[in-house]
Length: 162
Image (cartoon, rainbow, N blue to C red):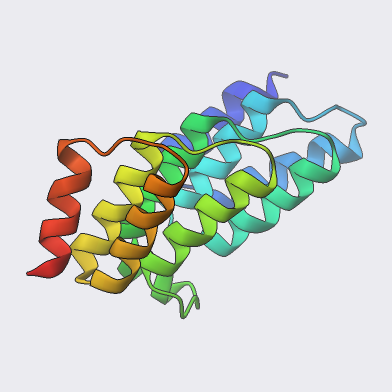
């Protein structure tokens, strides 16, 4: 049985609970989690708006010595805006801006350094939410760390100001 293919199917269908159950099944069968398997489960959670579950999975991965990829974080940050209604329906009171900021913090805490794509995506989430203060805060963090803004970053800042 190929767990990674099954988890990929769960990711594509945003079937977050099935993905998490399958990871648990892997544990029960003494099958080690892989980065790829976890990535599929993380993105299934993200696409379904279950960012709290994604955060918990990131912690479980960390306990096992597995880190989400830079691409996983980028997609989850983008999902903070895409799934705002789903997130609220899932019982998460945080808005997309706060979640994007938390993901940036998680990245740094786990040693995955955000690049201009991550910062730009987070600023874009804030811009679409009209959250000027958070967009500026992220922009300042980005500059402080020496990451150069690009067109997407500036567009997000301008959108947040409107």
